[in-house]
Length: 320
Image (cartoon, rainbow, N blue to C red; front, side, top):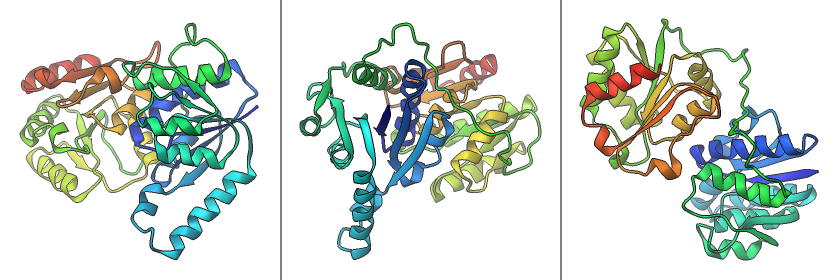
């Protein structure tokens, strides 16, 4: 059986799809799974050994340059590639009009959420079969239920298993002292950030524990914030710009991870590391980081738990 998954973005959404891939491979060990994903995240699906081929799209970039001939040439090449592939099932787990249109180009029976289960109801018109899945469930559970309905199996007795493997041959991008932790301070919205002075206080507390703090960044604002935190405490290292796989290797070698509501927190949980996730503005019951069954501790803290930095530090030290 050949299956095409469409889950293009964002980073956290892609990570949320991994347990469904594990389920499908457990119930159908001979299944071949390909995955359509945004070009920025093409490394991620390959972390799962059951994924055969990764098909990149660039919808985000294409939208910004629809007047350019090169853009339409790229789109045409992508559509041609999809049309020549033959699948038994095409599963759109994104639930958006853009992903439904991508699904429409592939050859295979199309599955997606029904109009009451989906984020953009118009997208459900493009599916030949539709799954009913409550929108009040966690995103990981929704993905698992969609795929279980498409392949006709029950997830009740299947453990939550991300199933990821990163090669031990991945070279670490910086030399670290041991022990070290990862601090993911960047996020997509200002209201989802933890105040800079809290990060400075947290880094100072880690210094007292002789724990090194590694801080990656995704843009100049985040880089400057990381540099200011590093200036306040000698145990902080501002990472260079590195690949997602290199970040994954650092996560695997760390004592644990703390960070905001961002995809890298979900990647850390998927890589089975202790995680303290900070949710000052969003609802962790719907998209919070989840530990796999039998895995390391994953703790989600909401807005009311984040004002007392000492309490956050204590909670983090408990789980690592």
